[in-house]
Image 1 (spheres, helix red, strand yellow):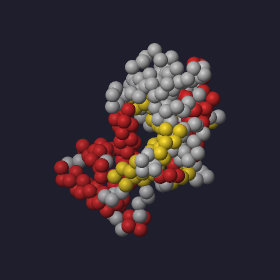
Image 2: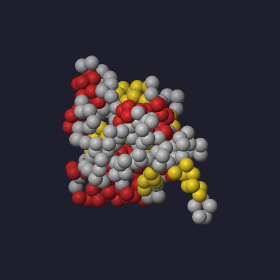
Image 3: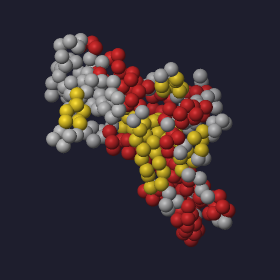
Image 4: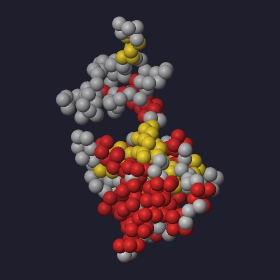
Length: 315
């Protein structure tokens, strides 16, 4: 691997160097940041690809001599295309039920119940799951974004900054953030007509299952991103930064919903700032080279104002 190839910064890419550069391009004006060009699938690519025809008459786009995405003047356009590349996952609730039940047992004080009462309550939970959740699938939108959006003041998207006080306390060293992900999902509301026929205790556990599903799914997404980035080297993924958590004000909801493109998975926000469906989540994960969770664990449920954690109260 040519570690001394001065035109490139991404020297650890397995495809490095992706192609040679002519002497006409100045070193300061060329920097290979992208292993895959997001412009490739565009109908009218602004670059200069060459087309060759196969024996079957199929036209193939050859970008080996294209320098468009590598020129500093074009970074903004390329990054815009990168941010528009969404990954939509469909998660079956059945994949989450074991962890959901564990969370419910912990939060509902199952440890203080006797064996018979515990059995009865588990039967009600199982019945509620079979009736309302067994066929449920949840769509999750993931949008990978450049680590440059993360600052000590908050998350910067163009001219818009979403404040997040925990980032200052996190004090991430330069180069320790590999990437960031916006995400959103919404668990479809329960059929109220069917729910009306349920007992009071079953209604209670239906609500517990909905809450547990959002919590467990957030952790599922975090683990998914961590596995995705730890193929060759161990990486860490933070908890979800989002409105009402880690020093981010709840007023950030409409901004994040819009930036994430949450409407693609059926999530919307009304004029009052409430998300629909009611059990919806939106936020940001950071992929890091070191574990940073311990530094900001006290900020987990901070709403980012004087009523938040000790850090925010002292501002």
